[in-house]
Amino acid sequence: MPLEIALFPALSDNFGYLVHDTASGRVAAIDAPDEAPIVAELEKRGWTLTDILITHHHADHTDAIAPLKRRFDAHVIGPREESGRISGLDTLVGGGDTVTLGETVFEVIDVPGHTLGHIAFFSPADKVLFSADALFSLGVGRMFEGDAEGMWKGLERLKTLPGETRIYCGHEYTLSNAKFALSVDPENAALKTRANEVQRQRDAGEPTIPATLSDELAANPFLRADTPELAQAMNLSGAPAWQVFGALRKAKDNF
Ligand SMILES: [Zn+2]
Image (cartoon, rainbow, N blue to C red; front, side, top):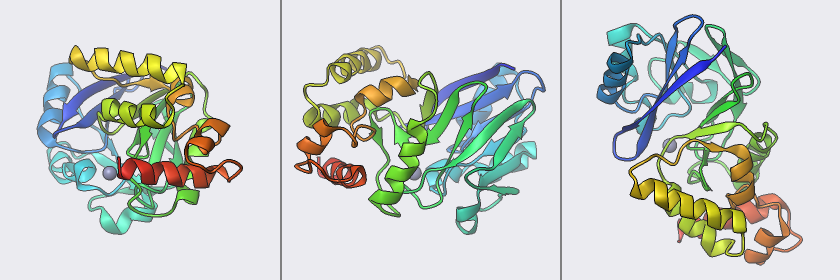
């Protein structure tokens, strides 16, 4: 069954998302950054919020849980591992669980590292991934919690999803991510093409989201930590991919 996705800006550079299961009429917000733009988008589309799917505990993804719950009596689903840090969760989930929204089924995938209990939501039927701050276009989230080995393991799982999967992430960071990516992977033709397209999209005031997984596999240096090119760029030829990944993450922190 088709899933309609509404994407809109929220806060300074967050993406707001509403997903509409057309079979049942159920509508979920993916994360709850800010009440006003979510309500405005619901009114514009004539949708009523029934569910909220939370990916991690940061305030710019959870601040609007309470007001949205009050307004719509929405059911809130979120990461079991972060239940102590998020108020208002009704159902707790973790990697391997499924979440249903009418006829739409999301698989829950553990993607620790940005936060330890961070989860992503993947619909195999629609080939759509909501990755929030675990995986951005041409980048990954800052590693606030956990370690490089665990974060790489979560990304390796995402790398196995179908190539045509559309990735909807938490922030519009693609242009600055492209600059770092080009600094470590300057000969990558797919990256150069994508960076030009991203510049054009931003100049036109368009979002750079969604990107497909196959595009990200070709151009996102963090997903390419297991290639000889990126190992060499980090002076880690022959090292395990998670070490190359960790070095890339550190280099981006200081970029
Ligand atoms: Zn975050």
